[in-house]
Every structure is written in C-alpha cells, then in structure tokens.
Length: 388
Image (tube, rainbow, N blue to C red; front, top):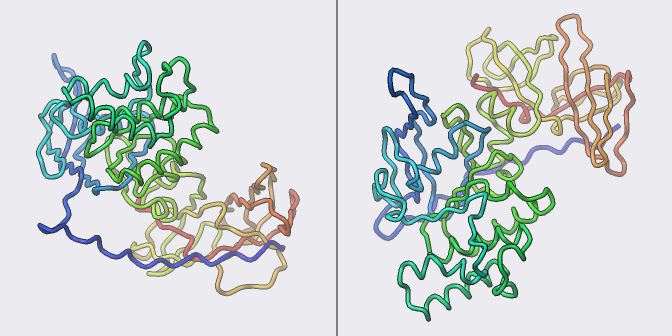
C-alpha cells in the first residue's frame, strides 16, 4: 500500500497586525466600488473590464492579482498607476484619493513586461534617468543608484548596456530603476513573462527576496498560478472583471470558494453531490462524504478535492474510519518522472465518479497498474464545498 496520508495541519488565526501610532494601520491601496468601462460611443454597448471592485492591499505585503487574459487584472493595476481612470468608484493610496490624478502625481512606480530600457544608455544611466529628471543632486543620485545596484546584485554590470545583458539582468535593471525612486507602492505587470522557465523560477525567488528587503508594497499582475503561489503573501483571483476570492496562497489553493477558483488554481477533482445534512453530502455513486456545505438538505453542491490530497490502497485494505473512501478501478496510469497520476472510475450501482489521484514518485511508494481495483481515501478536511 502507499504511505499513510498525512493529516492536514490545523492553523490558528494569525495575530492581528499592530496598529499604527495614529490608529489603525492604513492600507497601501484601497479600491472601493471601482468600475471601468471601455467604448459605448455611437450607440455601442460599453465593455465592462472591471466590475464594482472592492479591494484592500496591506502596507508591506506582496499582493498578486491572478487570472486569465481579459479578466481585468491589468486594467485594475493601470487604474492604481494612473494610466487608466475609473468610470466609477474610488482609488486611494495610503488614504489619499488618486483616482483622477496623473501617474506622476502618485507615489507608485511600474515595472512592465517589456522593461522599456533605453538601449543607448548604460545600466547606471538607465537607473539614474528618473532621478535626473527630478533634479535630484548628483551626489544623492550616485548613492541611491549604488544602493539599488547592490540590492539587485548588478554592481558588476553598471557600465554595460541592455543589449549586453541577459533577460534576467535586464529585468533587474528595470526593477532597480523603479525602486530607486523610493515609491510607496511598486506595480509589476507580468514582468517575468518574457523569460524562459528556469530563469523565471529563479527570478520569482529574487523578487520575493527584494520585496522583503525593501519592505514596500508590491502589487503583481500575473496569469501564472505558480508565480502567484510562490511569491505572494496574499492573492486576489479575478475573472470577467470581478474579484472572486482574496486570501493567502494556502487558503486560495486548499479552500477555494468557487468552481472557477478551484479549477484555475492547479488541478482538482470537481464532484457533484447532494447535501444529506449539515456535515455530509452524497456523491452520484452513492458514497457519503463528510463536508460542511452550508446548504439545505437536498440541495446540489460541487465538491473539490485536489489530486495530491488523495491516497491509494489495495481494494481489500482495512477501513480507516477517520478517512472518507471510495473503491474503483484504475483506467489510466501516467508516469511524469517526479509523480504518477492515476485516473480512476468508481465501482457503483449509481452514476460512477471519475477521480484523478497524484502521488509523488518517492522510494517506498507502491505503484498500481491499469485495470487494478483500488481504494481511494482522503481526510475529510481535504474536501471543499464550492459556492457555485
């Protein structure tokens, strides 16, 4: 049989953040009732890119807006930056209303995917350009540029031009150019999108290190779930202009609220069920599972269980009353190197349930073959009831 399933950790609520000297700590960014419409002229229907968005981003956190193309995340970022103005609602940065202020009047800087470096300038000149436009004294410019070069670990590349740098180094120059202005909030619009996979993964860790070191708020836009889960203190998931869920990466992944969030963030098993009582529901194959749905008896509900939360045993394995379980037959086994994925159909007199089980390919893990009968088991706390 496989190794025993580890019981999910129980986390207590985090301690409240200390209040600022003048009272409650102000959010770095607060968007209230923000809507953005495009078009609508000459009788055409306007396109609603962002729909009645309420969002607070805390001072000093790494916050990611995550969602597919066209979901409204970049438009939301551009309204914080000042490149777009809201059609309705309020945008505040540290309690200052900025919804109609131009970009240069806001205490933010933006790092774009294209980097937008000046090819004829050296690294130092690119970084110093904004300070020179602000008439900052030359001595202060030299000090601040030297500090950010050290922060992004490019001190040895100071005299090179962008074409002499790798993609990752160019990204660091763009980041340094934004940070040297000492913004209160740094906005990042998919800045790693042009990098290859390994470099992108390395830069995820670098960005998080830099954010923790400078201690300012990062607002990061991405469609890449791994990026958001790796770097973020909290994530806001968007779709069709609406903010569906906000929370720490663990909460977004383990307890998604909606079908979209469950399906967009990683792989998941989505199972139809009927509510039996306050603490249980019945799958279409008749299996009773323990889950609090918040729905009345007889209501239909969709349950979500992550493939790696499921464990495999032989079909004749003795029961463990702490775990929920179904018996089925393996339809397909896929070897992925570091993991093995099993597609399973339950045995039942009702409507069969299809499950995907993912187990790590580690020493001691037993392998199963197609058409073999197995028992699938999981901790009840691994099952999430979705709102839609």
